[in-house]
Length: 574
Image (cartoon, rainbow, N blue to C red; front, side, top):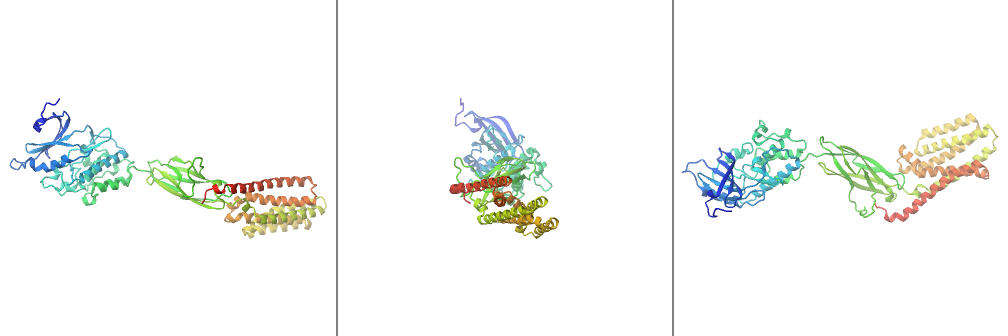
């Protein structure tokens, strides 16, 4: 129940409870008090000006500054509720906030530091946009309150604190040593950069876990706050640089205003983040079979110690990619898609069954990571192979079939005329050896490799010299079959293999390579079967062993073509 009239004198309205702080050199005393009219707690700050009564300008000399403070309206600035005159001074009554000051030692994580810094700069932006601008002059941990909901309050405003005020006062007396910039210590003109220094010094104390009473221990021989070696490894170098600029010795070297400082802060990360390294930075896929699923590895590493890299892969937007509708199956996938670690090997998997044949695709895959650079792009190129009809050139395979058919018939005819026994056996051995060496010779000729081709010819000469003219005929005919087969295989499959051995091996094991070899074997066996009038059991068995796989492969390849023609309108375009 109120027991005091609203018209009661201010000095009798407030009842001091306890002293909160005292600065006798500057004539500042702060009390926690009770408003006997509202029964609410308040804060009363007394400004005692040590002047003889004859020089005391009186309460009216500060009336304009007090009115400006009473007009301040910001959620992080307690309201100035009242003011009254005391002997040789002025008392201001402020709204009391139940919150702890930053002067209480605690450990702050990077996100809390940034959030706190943003709050303080937003308060300064408000003060600096007043007409005229308001300068606090005494920002330090004890004058910044923070409650349990992380609401920040700036308290303990001084008088006068109006930029450009005509009231004569010692600026240095209003602040705290260690938190005042040089221009305030020297009682020079204050600017929008003055309070920035004090915020920087406050943050340096928090980051180094130094109480404000020990801030002098942070100063180096040049009078600069040196806190870098005391900061947690979680704090980024960019934020340390930003903070150093806040505490430059001269105002012109600092940010010109709180707005400029906040703009610079928003462009950097306060937390020390991993730095992504990707190897390789581009991938090229060259599948040998249409519809093949092919994968390549990419290594993601982090070069910043004491940090852990977390990230995930996705495919960048491309106008030719289908909408992510229900049932959509991506043709580029990742294993793993999400990862955590400082050196991770990821697989980029490409499914060519959803692509057009004989086309070149180029896409961007994105690595999104919690890192100094959050997004990284990797280019992938996919050159899809040709379809079955392109892998089975009809003219070349027809020539192969006719040549090997004729050679098979002639060889069986010649061997059939040989005497039984060792000569016939050697003739067949000659056929086998000739076919093998001829095949190698055909490949060598297609590669343009004269030494290998010469070695196969030398083998034929040696065979003829060792076993005689008639027995070497088998070798010669075998060599013709092998050479023809080898050349056609290499010529038809090697166009897209860049002439390298690894590419050749891929072609040999491809469907086209198998079909070419099976056609040569089947037609050669067919030539022998014609000579024997299809009456030889072993020859018929050889026809089955070569013809059935050949028929299956040809059927499957043309089945692929049929399915491709049906699905082509639904396939993804380059």
